[in-house]
Image (cartoon, rainbow, N blue to C red; front, side, top):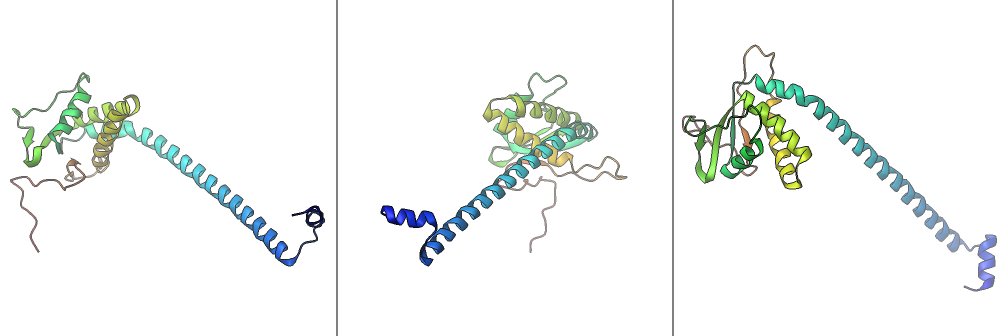
Length: 192
């Protein structure tokens, strides 16, 4: 482009094709700015929603622990190594007493899985310790603690302390690949 073309364009003496090209480029820039603003607003909304959810979750923690204490028993079904990690996490927790196989509270299942019978107080201590470890541990242990907390919290949240009759609770299942193994004394569902 020469000096004459530059002067002609600066004065606004454009051909219809150049005007269409200029208008299309301006439209594309405007649409990109609007998309950027919308994306930033959506990101800000998502961050705000996460903060609200986190505050709500923190507010629910004390009542969740109190509800857990009122539960007589909850079953945990997980891999034996997962149980070991949980017990290590709970080691030195005041008031914690590990369930033992001798008491009949730990049952070995197929595939190195175990079924553990926990009291409500133990579940409350699990919620306490895993919430603490999720916030204050190295990344690997924090991820495991968050997984434990979510699994136990999801079952505890199903409890209605004001219900006239206590409903059966599902087991806390820490195995995303299978459903809970049936107990040997349970009747399997009818086949279809």
